[in-house]
Length: 328
Image (cartoon, rainbow, N blue to C red; front, side, top):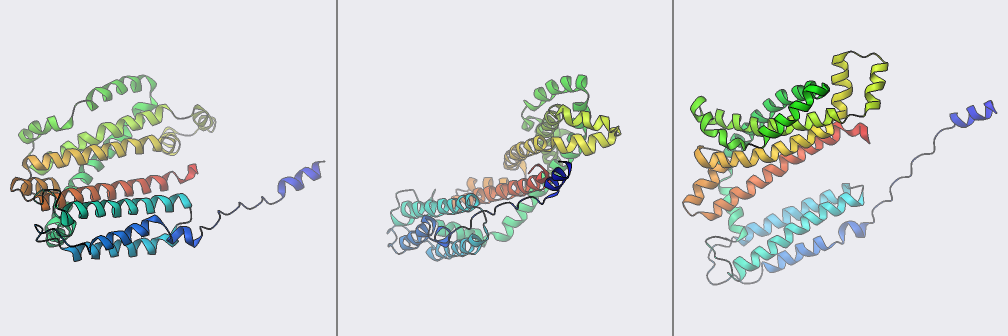
C-alpha cells in the first residue's frame, strides 16, 4: 500500500486544459466594425449650411487609425472576456462619434459655439499639441510628487500603527476625521505658508492621497488572516521581516484600493486648484479658454484630462496585477 501511495503521489499532475481558441468570426465580424463603417458613411452626408469648419478629414483619419489599431490588437487577446471588453469600448467610441457628427456637423441641432464638430476638435488638438504636452507634464509632475510623498509617509505609518491593535483603533478614527475634510480648504494656508503655487499644489495632492492610502494600509493590516501571522510567529521571524515580507504583501490589495481612491481625488483637486491660480496645467488650459468662450479648446482640455486620468489609472492597475500575481 505504501508503494502504491508513493507511486500515485509522485505521478505527474495532469496538464491544465487550454482555453479554447477564439474563432476568427468572433474576432473580426463584430458590431464594432460595423459601427466603424457607419461612422465613415455618415461623413458623406452633406454638412449643414451653417457649418463652415467641420474638418471631416480629421475625423475620418482618426477613425481609420483607431480601426487599424483595433484590428492589429484583436488577434493578441487570448480570453474572450478581454476581447469583448476591448471591442465594446471601441464600439462605444464609434457610436459616440456617430451621434456627435449627426447632431453637430450634419444637422446643427446642437449650438455650434458650444458643441463644435469633432473633426474641428481634433484639428485644434493637433494645433495645440506642444502647449498641451507642456500642461500635461506640469499636471502629472505635481500629481507624482504629491502622490509619491504620500506613499512614502502613509504606507510605513499605516503598517506600524495597524500592527498595534491599541494604536490602530485610535488612528482609524483620526484618519476618518481628517479624511472627511476636503483638502482644497487647505489651499489658503498653503498659499500663506509655501513660496510657490506649485508647492501648494503638491501639498494639497499630498493631503488628498495620504489619508486614503493610510486608511487602506491600516485596513489591510487589521484584516490580515491570523493564520498567516501565527505561521510567521512559529517561524520566529523578526519584526522587520514580519512587516515587510508578511504583513505588507498581505495588505497590498487594500493599499491599492486606497491608492486608486487617492489618485481619483488628486486629479479632481489638482484640476480645481489649477483653475483657481495656476499659470500652467490642464486645469489652467480649460479655465483660460473657457473664459474667452473658446469651447473647442475647452473640450480638447476636458478630453485630454480624461485620457490622462485613464492612462495613469491603467498603469496603476497593471502594477497592482503584477504585484498581486502570487494571489492567482
